[in-house]
Image (cartoon, rainbow, N blue to C red):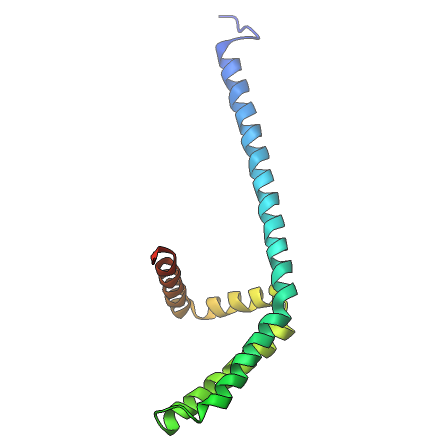
Length: 135
């Protein structure tokens, strides 16, 4: 049988190719939009690092100031001061590292400690889920 240029098979192949091209274009657009969103988010985080670090320092100072007055004795006081020191250290880290460096550090931490990282992610997921469904 002769193959006509306008045969059913050629039309199907043409439609499939056109659909593939359209899907490829949409995927490319989505990738571009996601990349733009990630860049915008990173810029926003970088622009707010100083404010976040100052908030952590403020919390650390408040905790140090109130630690000695907490009930529970020396053990509780010691834990409160240790927590305040960690908050202060975190403030310094946030102040000194940009989003890309923080991302690299988190990736390295997860790679070195996959089990605990998975547990922490599950706990955060649970808490976020509870916060979103709790009235």
